[in-house]
Length: 143
Ligand code: CMP
Image (cartoon, rainbow, N blue to C red; front, side, top):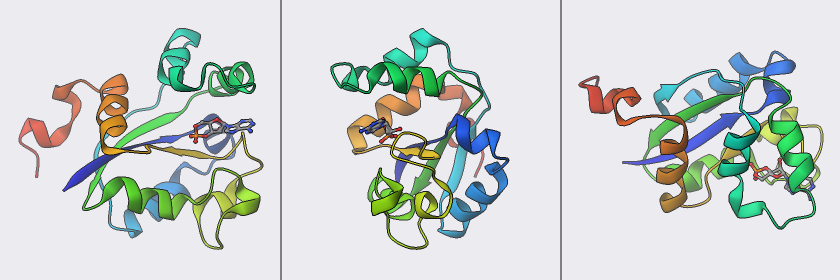
C-alpha cells in the first residue's frame, strides 16, 4: 500500500463539488486516511508550493490557493501516486483525458480543482504539511 496527498482546491469548494470529487476518488478504490477543511495562510501556501517559487505563476498560485477554504485528504491505495494522477488528469484540463476529474470539472490550468502528489517522497512530505501522525487514522488503530 502507498499514500498520496490530494487537495480539493478553493474552486472545488466554491463550486460545491466536494461530494462529487470525493465520490470519484472513492469509486476509484482510494481509502481516506485523514481529511480536513482549512483556509491556507499565505505562509503555509508558500511553504507547500516552495518547489514552484521561481515559476512565473507563483504569486497567482498563492493568491488562488488562499482565496478560500480547501480540503487536504491523505489517501491510501496500491500505486497511490500514479493511480491518483490518472484519475485527476493533466494539469491543464484542456489536455486532460475524458472522464478525469479535471476534464469533468476544472476551469483552466490554474483553477484545476484538485492537487495530487507527484512522487512517493513528495507525498510523504505533503501529507506531513497538513496532518500530524496522530491525525492519520491508520496510525490511530483504525482499520
Ligand atoms: P498542481 O499541479 O496541483 O500544483 C501546481 C499548481 O500550479 C497547478 O496544480 C496549478 O494550479 C498551478 N499551475 C500550474 N501551471 C500553471 C500555469 N502555467 N499557469 C498558472 N497556474 C499554473
